[in-house]
Image 1 (cartoon, rainbow, N blue to C red):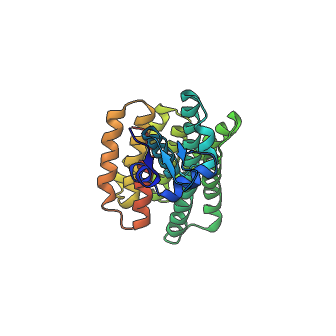
Image 2 (image 1 turned 30 degrees about the horizontal axis):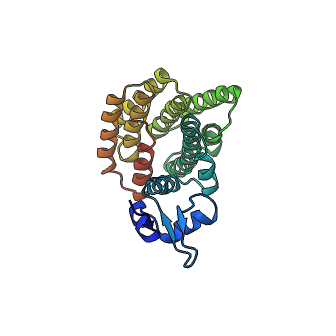
Image 3 (image 1 turned 135 degrees about the vertical axis):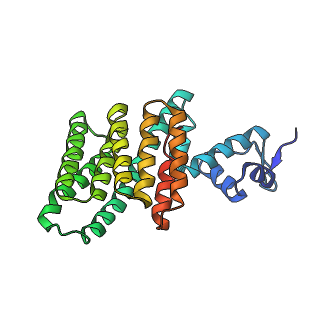
Length: 259
């Protein structure tokens, strides 16, 4: 088979010729041949697959320097590196969710008669739990602290907060246990979120995230069929979320559930 021109290789790989030239310059994907008189680059058909893989890894927000390292690894090391990258992405998503939840707590606080002191402790515990969930290199002691803070925050919201606060506190406790891959308590608290939403007529994104919590907990438990069922429930509930950003946050979160 004849070598492909850079334009042909780029079209087949779904990248631009400029990208292929850049990959060559940084030593990520050298052409099979270069015409000495014209400088035109030519690629073999099998190199298209490598270019496609590079494109997919770039879509996953991996920098080119890291991609070059990954492509030098054996398959098991490559898989381990992708899992580590997934952990970093999950931590970033947790940070964004923390911002959304904090904003919702602030908005909800205006609708209650709670004093600032009433809100300070559970909110601080809630945010402290998020901080630990975001940390990529938690120690076993920090894992334990994360559990204790989540439960303490939930306890205080149950004393002074609204049903919305209780549902979000239960959701956070469930999420902590999924992060730690502990299925039974994750399932228990996910069911609690849904129960609170149903008993108090809570809808919008709280209900959708109740479905998400159940999906994630079942995925951790290894029941992928049940996890998929709950993911579908969450996607259906997303239609009723009034805020576009809240809806996008839910749908992005669902994509992180391993099915």
